[in-house]
Image (tube, rainbow, N blue to C red):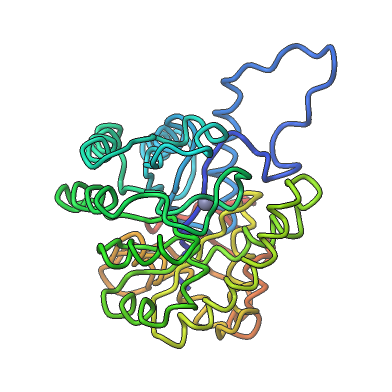
Length: 354
Ligand SMILES: [Zn+2]
């Protein structure tokens, strides 16, 4: 089968969402940890993704230039890792989340500042642009329901990116942000949980080939997995959003919207869990696998990966039984017999024995 593509990751040396993945917690009295250790965490992340059959990822926001530097390191052969697409920093209106997410965000207000923010990401080496159409479910002071950006600002972001040949991903939780994004011609909707409330938007997405990245796992994270560590108001909100996200998944499937797999969680390498959740949510195993390969490739605007055909890039996964019978085998690294990236074995039994 084709290598898996994750369309919504945050490559980061900050492994708060991945307990047990990074270095052990520092002990009192221990020599201070140099910040540069973070680069080794990123290198480990890249290797783990590849070993789990993830041959391409789309980074939708990381601190500083971590994703762009990791992309470079992989390109230069310094570390084994998936093909990386990065947005640079997330373009957002001035908002409380920027005080939490710091250098992951580039705040801007008004259409010309928005254009400048996009141009800065292009200067930085971004492959596409990510914009916050609404606030985030993970920030107490943000209301994810209304649009957080004005239409004139969002249109400026999209025009600036598209004119320069970059695709645009819109973070859209509430319905009005999603509506602005779809009506102004964004390329992918991230989360998009509210869209089941507006069938006309789903029809427009199917028609305009706007891809939905439902990121089901992130709602399970906030509502269940990390509920003890999250502000109570956010846990309650996430429970409601989780249920809506599944409703939107089903509605988008019926409407013929292209779906992509976006894990938006940790640890790196557990990404296929999102595929199994999409299947739990009503996709057939084949539809789930298509979302995690062809659908994600479309989200990234790539036509040379995501399927196995003559002339395309040979990103290939060899598994030891039929994932159409049980997609859960894709979560079990022991079952991944071989991972090829660009026609070259990069992980699996053969390379482990070598
Ligand atoms: Zn995310």
